[in-house]
Length: 330
Image (cartoon, rainbow, N blue to C red; front, top):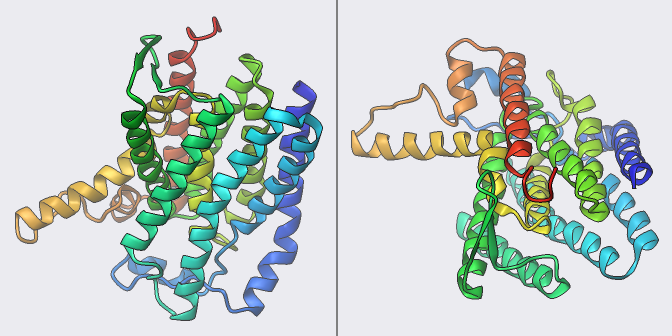
């Protein structure tokens, strides 16, 4: 199992990093450049035209890893590996369509919010039902730190799961606003799942997590400040779904609360800003939302935002590991 995890990481890392030499020039030739919102940070206008849809790099790498190990394991384990990748890919395709629409119309708006929501909701429900069918998921909600489970009615659990998945995926998407940020923040998240997969002897989930870890590390080679490519909605929606897929395949979705604390804070800052702005007719709590822009406006460089937010993610990944340590006698 250890060998498989290591191979998964290094294959994903090498393929993703190597694809940058091919995909980035291709995206430039296709004029697949990012459009920057005019109401966003003015200092980001220099990023206009930077190739987007770079998430295709780690998606392709993870596809290769999942194909290899689905063939090796076969049966139910191979099926759940395919299911996790397929689930994330559906969200990646939604993001890809959105990115294409933005590029075609030379703006920062692609699919409508309702279109995205309905597509994501359908994918979330289908994935949860598939995991239930494969026997990898129960309607019993595991509570980290307390090491107890709460049995829920099937319908209630499915509604809860759909809410968690759609919310988490879009929270990850919101976090993608500074060079390397969502990649850096997500590395400890992927590492957490890889470690848990190893410690709990759950090789399939561990392999998927290790592939995600390697893919993100390989992508960061090109995405670290100054970014030569952005992952786009193609990458960030795939990434968010991959993280959710792991949480549910491990049958512990509530771990996303401490583990995804940065995503949650980013999303809450956006919600709080909008609500306060409307309630006070124009006043703001943050200098700019989401949270990473607030710190940028406070004088932080993009590299400092990346470093601090990633460090917070590392800390909460360690805390999350402690929170689930009682489940299998870790």
